[in-house]
Amino acid sequence: MIMSSLKDEKTIPISERLFNFRKKLSLTQKEAGGLFGVQLRAWQDWESGKTIPRRTTLLLLQQYEINPPDIHNIPKMCVALRTKFGLTKTGMAKLFDVLPHTWGYWERGMMKPNYESREKIEKMFAEIEQSEKQENLSSAELNTKEYIQRNSTLV
Image (cartoon, rainbow, N blue to C red; front, side):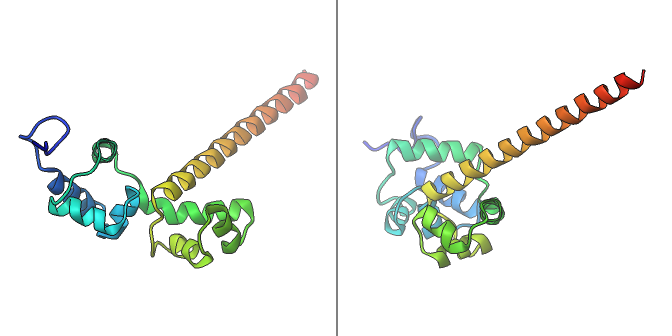
């Protein structure tokens, strides 16, 4: 017997959980499928209850239900990455192995990247943020040391 959830059959059916998740994030079926790394048809089959996702997908759904992906910041992240790297849309598209107009759609929020691309964007953005924080801390530390040295010679 196919179970309707990871824990037991008494919980909300997977098809309903998938539908609710998609609606909560205002995604189309195609976009939701992309978020989970599957084609539109697979997502439609899941939502209709015709088939059920693999266990890894169910675990990802469970994770996303607790901590939804911040897909609405992706356009801002795309622009920030391109600006930081000093690349054109074509240059960024090459890094992500997509067409230049696809990168442009991501920047304008007209299209959402698939799971792998979104993960790569988020990882790169987080690394840049971390690097900038380190630079700011180092700069503040250096300024403090200079201030102390200048004032200690005055005393």
